Amino acid sequence: MAEEQAQQNSILIPENRTDAAPQTQNVVLTERTESDADEGMTLMDLIRIVGKHMFTAILVFVLVVVGVTAYTLTAQKKYTATAQLFASYNNTTADALDSSVSSQSTAGTYIATQLKSYPDLVKTEAVLQPVVDNLGNSTITADDLATMVTATNPTDTYMLNVAVEATDPALSAQLANEISQSLSRVVSSELYASGKKSMVKLSVVQKAKTPVSQSSPNTKLNIAVAVVAGIVLGIFAALVRDLLARKLQDIMDLQSIDPNGSVAGVIPKDDALNGTKPVIVTKPDGAIAEEFRRMRTNLSFVTSKDGDKGRLIVITSSMPSEGKTTISCNLAAALAENGASVLLIDADLRHPSVAKRLGLEGNVGLAHVLSNQASVKDVVQRYWKPNLHIMPAGPRIQNASVLLNSRIMHELVHQAVQQYDYVIIDTTPMSVANDAAVFGQMGNGVVMVSARGVTYKSALRGAVNELRELDVPLLGYVFNLADEKHGRGYGNYYYYGSYYNKGEYGKEDSKSRKKHRRSRKRGK
Image (cartoon, rainbow, N blue to C red; front, side, top):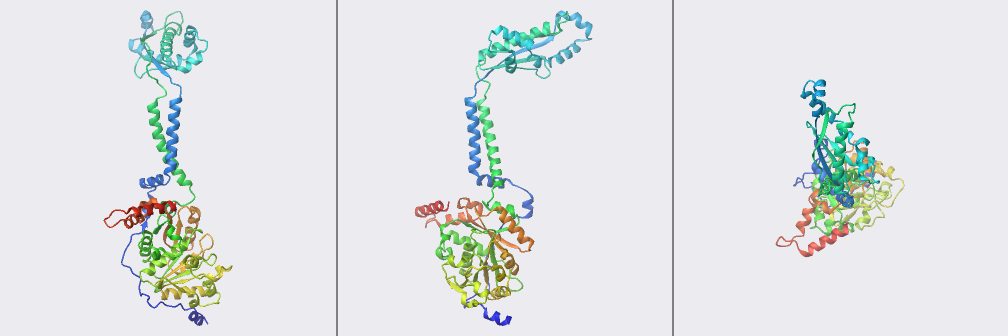
């Protein structure tokens, strides 16, 4: 009975089929090795991430620079005046000194120790209140002066610098000089009051002068810091946005999910792919057609399983709307163009789309074969060339998983790979069902289609992990809807596009340039 069923489902063999698929060109796939993955992010990865999120990086940079510049230009200008004092021991207390210390070296140590406390002493009320009283300005208090004055003791010196910052340059110089005098009086006469004068003497050796330029804000320094901070924060913002991005934006995102995966093809977003005919048919000399030929060459090295004559290529995606059917139809045409006999099976019984994509009658198809309502010969249609056959899915059905896992389906695939050079199965996205894993086990793996701006990273990661758990190899990825502007990062589409737009003498025709620009605008 099984033998009769197999005979009934025997597939029509094209008269001009070839015995072997061409294998004349070897193309290196885009691949990141395990050692590359272990190295972490490289400088080139960082440049690509920043380039991908250039708008965000530039926006953050501009906001930082403009914000700091606006603050610098609107901030209140302040001026700093500095007076210098020198500390020494009081000559009038030499006898007392001789009786309390053994040498001038010890006296020097004593003075240096005392100097360390003077930066704090200068902010006290004992020093500042007399200055406030002399000013006669009720708006300035000792606490206000404490915030305006600073004192420093340069290392290994007996010098004390008293600086005052104020909005009025003349006032800053006046306050610096008066505070220095007040500090000197406190240290010399009041601080060590015990019936004797202090052993430490502070002398003003350099009076403060009225400053001619502002000390804050420092416009040049602030802008320089803003530029550096803007660059750093812009890069950081790009990295954060890339990390938080939920959808794929370029091949680097794809390779971050599967570092060891190979990229079999990169297909840009283009209106030519929306038609009912493959670009191999409508635009055989175009850049996109060359990308599908490149994909054909990459996938031509897929080996047959268990001695099958042909090769089984299962095409799926992690989620709907990633363009797997468009990729399947164009790849089938590219393989057939090279002379190979090709059968394209629409196995997405839940959402049939191959017939609609190619403009074929799709009311009868695989669903009827699997339910014993029709034979394979009744549903297979020739398309474009005698060696390209299409098997539509037929009507949408409810028990798709049962039929696709049936014995009839297994026998159909087995017979197909015996009679065709290539059998391409367009199957359901992995987020809907794991039919791709079932077909992948019949062959040597599956091809995963991912689309820029459509594929969720979490969905792709889940699909990849599921295939690995089921021991179904990934033959390669197809990055769909790629941004043409980033063609240099994707592969060779950019160069193909430039080459095919050149005129007879190597110069790009103006008509071709205009058409190319219009195509890019529509693709945005």
